[in-house]
Length: 590
Ligand SMILES: [Zn+2]
Image 1: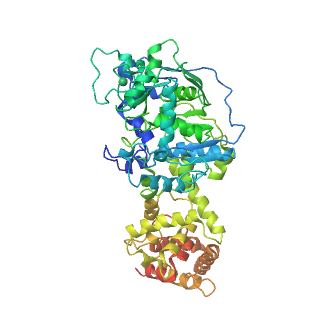
Image 2 (image 1 turned 180 degrees about the horizontal axis):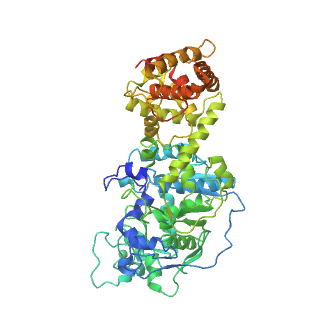
């Protein structure tokens, strides 16, 4: 089990923290969609070539069939792609949804197209008040900035579904008029009679048990004036199919009528209150917003036949779909709030994950990086991105995240060292460590002498740039820069007495700390190191050739014991420069 899995707290079940699109699929009926006969969810995850499209309760043998041998997948569209991310503000951004957003963003940027953000807030009852703001904040934080959508506008708005209801109603009506859909007057709470034809209980959402599809259009229109009704999809003219950019040609099993009807027919498009279901709104919006490509998780494949059928019914060209595997833990169970806290807010604030690391980490989950170097910044990802996805699910290993985190922190620190202007990524990193240091060492400013804590942390990062995994571990590793630790007993390896070493160390300090190389102001670590080395050498040589090596070794060790309390870390000269003269003297006298 990775460290992150161990430290991440588990959410209590039942809290609304997953976006609608995902929570819909996490709900028990949606999970059953992926069951094959009595097979467990985890088994079917390993078999993306045969996915059930309907509730196994009724249609356990249903399968979407994926064509074999489709090797001519396009790696990139020939024209600029318009892509979208369409979260529901019923929960916060999590790993899976951020990866979906990132892939769509990268495709748009790679092809010179546009990336849209659309808020799917039709389920008003489940809205979480601050979710939309948080979604926007977290996307921006991760570097996934949208070209059209809330806050920025665009030519195809509004970009919130709750503001587009008349459009959905108009199109649902058109489907009724063309007999592609029908009005259903059955009460959503009424139980279907036990002898009803099971094929008519076509939807997991409810059930039309009165064969409303056979009501003549005029009669249906008349009843609609006074009776509450929903609009359901009818029986499609032809079996829906689509060409998937990952899986090739996908179609419903053509010989079995029942599953076709089950997957599509009877599904509610417009609810009794006049608001659309996700499926209708999604298809209409993608069409009107001119979306060309939809990259989404394979959990959507059970819904895609319906979406394909809706495009057929409207006479519209569907976007190209690419279904990418799910994110799972090492036991092949889907990552979700049930087994893992994947909330982006928690990853960034509680665990100090850098946006650069997270975007890089997620990009590698399902996309085939064509290069050997996995450490990729966003501009590099844009440059390299294509539609070459791995089939099947991606196991999330957090060891990789820590590896990327170390590398991105190093890149950020080294860039900041070479730049005279402030860098937002470096500021973020410093802020994370500062907050952790203040919590761990409330008196920490005392250890940084005359410098403020922020500057002190910058100096620490400059001399220890390769070990940052998260702020807590970094501050713990570098504890002696923030506070004094219990003194350790001097080593007895050498025959040189502690008091002799102590006197020598004090003499070294005065030789190193001169007006030209003040330990309180110098950040020229090479110069300080040179001073220290030559002072140690000079001192050792004065002792006599036969003992000079022993003196040199013992002096270095003594400084380390006194200044760093025996802890590992950057070289002594760098430590001295960061601690400053007074603090070093104080520690030598301890
Ligand atoms: Zn009905």
